[in-house]
Length: 239
Image (cartoon, rainbow, N blue to C red; front, side, top):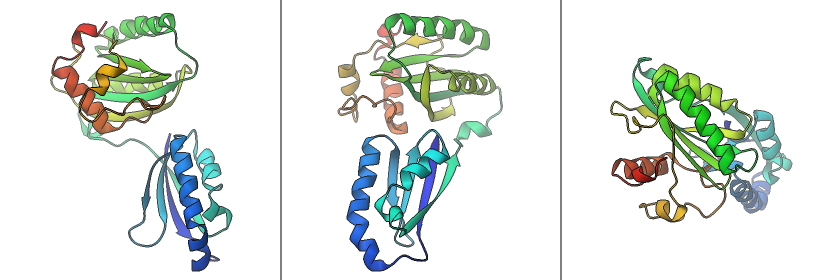
């Protein structure tokens, strides 16, 4: 889940102490970012302080990570954390409107070709009944799945998929209106494109630098992959 954490000074905070531990605090934030716990961070514009976006299992886990930061340990800063739920244009659409939803997740165990084929077989059977189509991409222990179809059907399916124990860190990256379906011919296709091919897309040259590339994918990068597919790339490789 995503958690927003906003820092403020404690009543006991002293300016000289803040400056003393600031650099060390920044280093700790960068380390958590590299681990995938902190997904984004900003400086407050109204006063000194930090705003963080975390990807964690619960708010409790978020607080545990924040309490280990030097400025928090020294009782100079304290954070207020808020769980976030996606709010996108799709939430305002009529239930029968078609949407395209993209989510990412991390596999709990290494996936073999047989395991992936089993997922695809079940997905195709269920999706056909719902009138949902899409695509599945699996790279280095991470999934990116695209679901396309009626809003109410896609939302029900996404909630069911989110509870599947074969993956974790499920996060919705994109949900937009899709009047012209991109994946209409596939109840669930598997993209067999090689990492090198995806890296050729403008803005994706360093995408596979770490094993959590799909978990950390941005909305902009998802749109680049979708645009490349619409332009004809990989259609012959979709099985």
